[in-house]
Image (tube, rainbow, N blue to C red; front, side):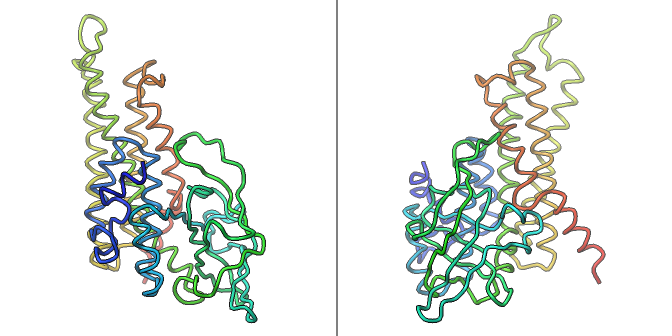
Length: 338
């Protein structure tokens, strides 16, 4: 599946054409991601994580890293995962404890620690790992799958996103060359946060795609389902629900596209607007999917219909890429800042 998406240009959405990408901007990509998510949310979400990693390498990598890695990433010959969250540091990402010490005698970093809830763990070929250096700063290291000392926890049994593995990523004296550091020493946390601006738009777009799919299923169902001698679509209560669902989808879509435009232009409010859009789209997206399940009644609860899968897949969007509580914190802090 992922190789086929790469053939269509979806594995390097905002990577320049000269290194194999599609050369699109964030505004373009939220439209594409929404459309893909109407089919499978979990597959699309994994694709967005890969694109976020490719985008970070394109933005912060040196010429050697870009030319060595990006062409293969754009073909999905090299799949990537983003490693920030740890068992003890979720929303407080800056407190991460995975350590990387530079061995001056070999010119290698030695990594010890572990990451949690990593999408694609064990399946991906490359891991962008945020580590704390001896001086306290956080750096981003590129860790290949075949690295000695790299291992993975059990595949987590999840509510949704079951088309891709989520596991712990464990580092036991893993050695990577200094050349595998992305950007400058101590720049990793800034890079991670900047990467999340786009990631939040992508996960919001996944929610809108799922909501749109559920909305269309609902409209078709209520026109066909008859109770009390008429289609339930003729009930005003049903029409009001559909109107609310349509409004939430429209509001979410517009918020995402506005934030994407601001991110493309480098506007100073882009980070806050991405947080607003992520919160709106993932909250409303889940609400629309859940309302669709209610409209289908008992049938919505069955796996014969697709709505229950969209509900399960979308619930995590209010948690990952920064919880929606953290989104409110980002926005509130920006509002009161001098």
